Length: 87
Image 1: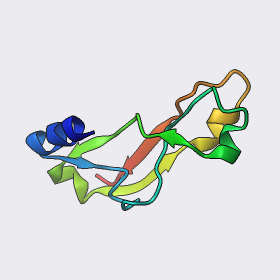
Image 2: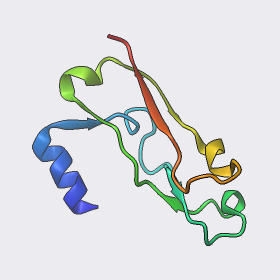
Image 3: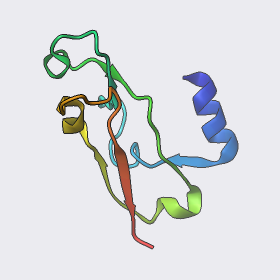
């Protein structure tokens, strides 16, 4: 995690999802197949990120992590992550 944060700072990137969801609020984009009921256990990781340049940070309009996609038939353990920019 420290290395990822270092890359983010070094590049001057803005975390588009954390723009809307402040820490320490849970933020997952991946849930293991090992959990019988991934939704009930609600233990995952944030493996998927969207970073924007600082000049785009003020144009962030909305965000979505499509958590329900994890429950689809033959679903991936990762879910789509989207941001909307007002440019």
